[in-house]
Image 1 (cartoon, rainbow, N blue to C red):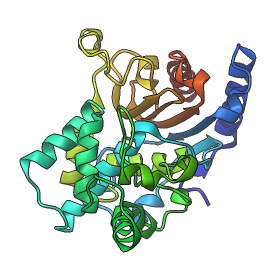
Image 2 (cartoon, rainbow, N blue to C red):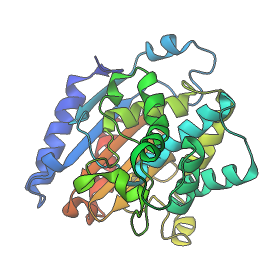
Image 3 (cartoon, one colour):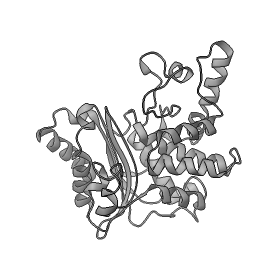
Image 4 (tube, rainbow, N blue to C red):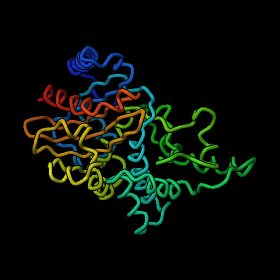
Length: 308
């Protein structure tokens, strides 16, 4: 059962939109795409702060998905997972809250730094890179690196079924024990679904998973400016070429994008005047999606317009 109430009209809108995009010069797009689209009757910012989690997740929300349970390589969207895990670890006193960790979390999310992500995952798991390992040493290292996955499994959310979030993100590629851990044909690479990413982002926005102050810190890192001058000054702004580029002026956006040679993704919570608050996750796999800088903005514009 979905964590939202499926809306048949929204579902049909998704089907019609994907088919229209396929016919408009994007053949086979439906197989390469996952979309989760949620609408809310009111702002979700800190909506769960004064509620029991069970009561919050029972509140009315409508949505639809297109292949929302499909597992896809998330690229830098996995950094959202590591951000939430870090705040959960800190809340449990499993991590020391120090300036270097905060600097890394900010760089990981605001600028999508891969180097910062390496530091964060090392801190979360108690592992480090280095030469190849063998036998018990490798087994112990792998056991430690799975800590984030075990935490995710412990949430008990069906939307996270099959998830794998245990690998760093790279500018070049893994070496040594990190390469070993990917397995043959990269079979152990990260893998997430748009439905699960949507629920995790919603939990951050609403303060439904960790404390409201922690969620406030995460929202501050995730907030994106739509100001043209600000975007022009930062070519890697995570707005242009992604969902934020399809939003009207004055909209507010919290998001985490992912982009590499075989993927273009974005997870966004949006508040725009005259429209219900909206959460949208789009994951596009393959070279065609990766190179299509108009796809995500077009999806955001059409789906937001359909909901207003």
